Amino acid sequence: MNISTDKIVSISEANQNFSKTARLADKLGEVYIFKNNKPKYRLTVIDGEEAELTVPAPGETEEVSEKKLAKILGVIKKYRKGLEELLRLSDK
Image 1 (tube, rainbow, N blue to C red):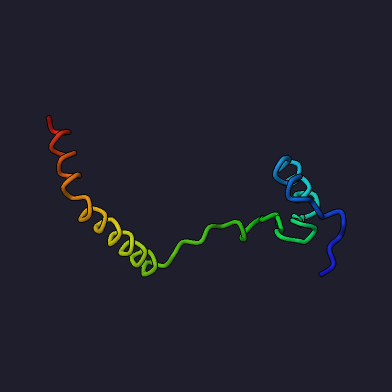
Image 2: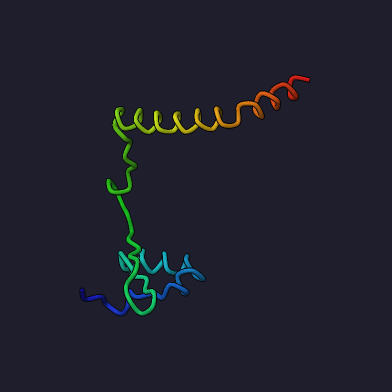
């Protein structure tokens, strides 16, 4: 991989001056952030259609919701007595 030295930023520089790093990416299209003298991250400018967020398909959304619901129900079962006590106290 050949990287122009103009596009290299150290990770400490990127961390301390992120806005400067972002402006450089705006100017050059992308910058490479090096960690331990090796390319670790690439900061790329996103424009137009690439910047659009993708919405998961309905099936994916339901699957994620079912997993989250199962976790929540597990927590409720585990701490049911404490939750009931909190509800009882909040009604006073």
